[in-house]
Length: 165
Image (cartoon, rainbow, N blue to C red; front, top):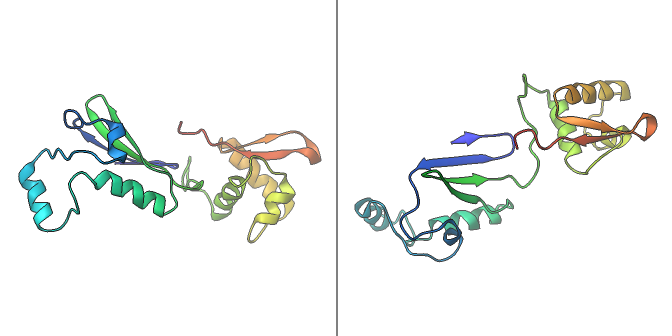
């Protein structure tokens, strides 16, 4: 299991059972349990609803919670699932811990492609002074989390989303 700023991934050694493809996992498919005795025990204890529906239930629960469908992947003898959030989540730690204000700035910037300083300030719960906000943005820029476009009063701030990609 790996937790990133922008996703959760769970990987397991081993490939899908023979004949089952990644694209089959989001629709009705045959159940091919690796260990039929364990699978039967889970079924008898009512810990599984129906054979071959587990991955479909995961997809349904993600969508019901307002998140994108998970991504299933098979690669080099391993199988994985990637869960993506429905909204931008600001990192807690980059080179070191970010403050709540810095995380709030990142969250505000995730709402639009670019924003001027005054708009960022207007969307914050407890906005700092323009000078302090500018200092925070410059610090986030040095960390590679945001970038500025333009100059002077026409400048805008943009969230850098491709840190892990």
